[in-house]
Image (cartoon, rainbow, N blue to C red; front, side):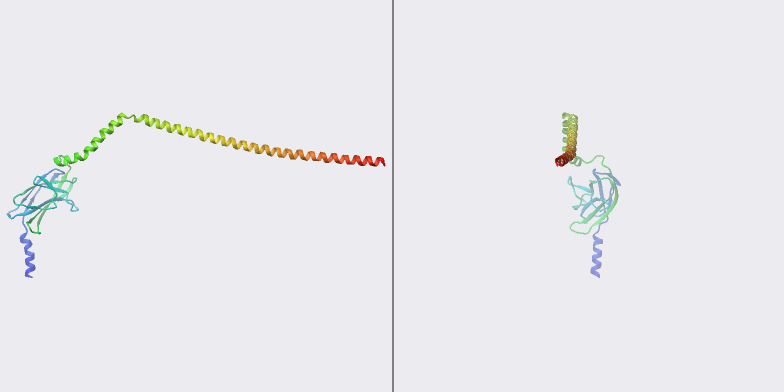
Length: 235
């Protein structure tokens, strides 16, 4: 029991009482000052960061004129440094700024958090502005060239020619299709006429053939009758 009580007391005795002094609002991508106030003179590591509602860190901290991620502690920074520069690298919104102090070489820490409102960026820091310009330079170089190309090249006549070509091709295709249809119609009509004429010929030949056969049979019959009459007269 005594050992467990000691373990519970030790973290409390190692914790430092301090106050986080930060503005209620700041602009995105612009540095602002945050300070730590404490009566303790013991050396502590410092971590100061801004986080969103999902506990995601969205800020940077300046260390020796360099902007760094606040995920790591600034070793032995307090109490030699009590004021620090922070900037939010995310969009505007309502967030939370936190500061942690821990004794160098220890794992336990003390933490203070305060709400902070981040406004849209007005005058971003120079390094962020330069990085944005470097990213956007190729796009800016491409756009004038594209404009020059558009001015130098006659775009509208090409579009009109294409339209004319397409219309001509469509009209030629339509005429070809019409000719094909007309030719097929004429051929079908010719075929039908030929069929009708052949059928008429067959009908005519059958009619004339029947008449001729009847005449022949009639003539033969008359000849037979005449022969019989002559034979009877001679008797």
